[in-house]
Image (cartoon, rainbow, N blue to C red):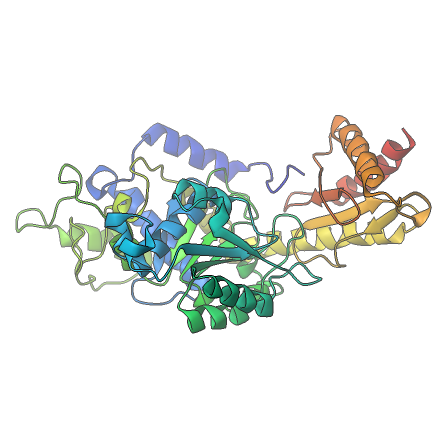
Length: 435
């Protein structure tokens, strides 16, 4: 129950050993050709699950979900306002109609605000959009927030929707958000760091409906898919957009193709061996010219030093298969529902905050002796904090989060969580309250 992570497995250990032995960098193709091909192929297959099926669909790995979200903001700004790549964020020089504004759910991850600070927008440029009673971003509130920003002479350009919010696990309504983004010409990003892998499950992939309409999407296999940390993908329907936004001249790394340097056959043979094709793709080359496929992956990202994190997902996907991922995910969702049921059955001592079943793998609840919460939120927070400290001492990695009635328990299960563990948690909570 380690927050949003599980333990590792045999495939993960083997992958980490292999990457450590190779100890190579995925910045340019000639330094690490095999791992480059694996990353491109894996990202393309992963992207297709979310509905990104264009001829240049795919993505890249970043150093974590926060890094993927940061990269998406840079790409959005440099794509919508190309002059910002030269002149910075000043709206008078980058072509915007006013100061640039980013919008995110009130339940969105703090990495969006941190990225805005990093990019020089400042934290005040991030406006939060109210959520509904289920913790989902309200489309009507989003539209009102956009109009309010425009009415103040500002320019909202980026909307961060969430697949599996950090506390409640909610999935935002992506189609409705996409409609508004298209209406106002805004970049739609989905932070699916936590809940995105539900796409592997026939039972739960409906929660990702509309993901194909996003311009970029973050998803972290190192969470729900149980591959080793770190493994985060930033996916898109067109990686050329990533390239145009991030490429910079560096002749000592990125070399345009010449007659003696282009080696289409070698790359084509490798990638088509993976894809089972026989016809080489058009435009493969050692360089990253606008007409060609990009093989130097550092020219797509903010990083130059890049580890081969895609191999972690690739080997797990090969070993377990999509069906194996589905079984793991369905089992984890069933375990979350089981814990929610255990809590709801003890209404004499607990008040369930999550819906039942919960939207993702978090189960949130209050300890409420006699079935009643304290009148003062501070007292509920005090009880929760003391009990969490005692539970952690007993080996349960649980946490708490602020709510309207004070802080509540936030318990996250994963694909390795056992029934006996969640049953022991409920008993541990009772013992913790008695202590």
